[in-house]
Length: 198
Image (spheres, rainbow, N blue to C red):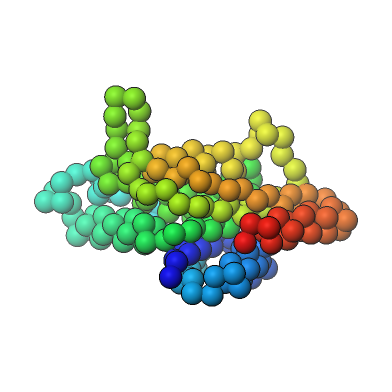
């Protein structure tokens, strides 16, 4: 049995095009591998605390110096890292909001990044400590982006590399709000690519 972790990040709920594409992709994976175990983490309906001074200290101070609230934040980080490590495949819904990723996903990443736990500092730079696995970024955009203006895919790749993940696959459906024809063509291309991958 393999385990697939699905991270939902869209504020649009079931109307979300990134969620719809992810769910189609996951269904195709289930069709190909029926014994897959699915873990869904909805970062919008079950939001995580954003990083602040208290949270910063919670992940860096000795446990003996942490408050009860900080220990709870640390335990949450432990649980999320353990959940991520249990997954053989990760699927991330990645809508583009104001030229960046959803803040809910950034809060998740802040809990996943733990010096000495998910990565370590070395003389040659950070080294990821989590095992590598396939991570699929199902990205949606209302318009189109020049590669120099892409603050959606590259930052996520960079973060995943920090914790040891190199097998990152991006599937982008863009131009979804430009015109009905543009939306139809982009979604058709995305569906075809997903079928090939799954």
